[in-house]
Length: 80
Image (cartoon, rainbow, N blue to C red; front, side):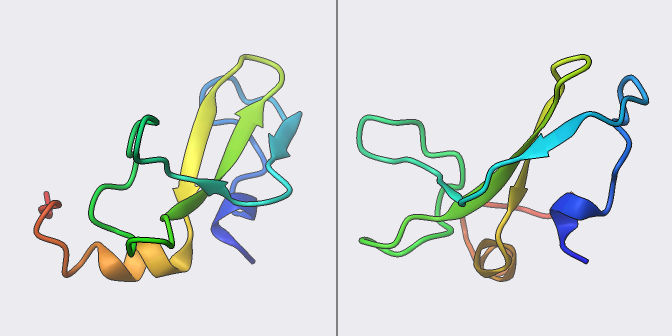
């Protein structure tokens, strides 16, 4: 089961009308905000899938596996 499918209930409102992007969303850079700084290569932007609750509007992003592996070595992120 993928990370985007683990929760079939919205954590904010308990709604079950959740939608996920069909394709991955690139994290940006250039003129767009870089939502995953340091977790991508020059011509291969980091990616995530977005999940939206149609009941309350909660929007979440789940980084793809490549970005989750890269975060452990990136100097732009620190562990809490």
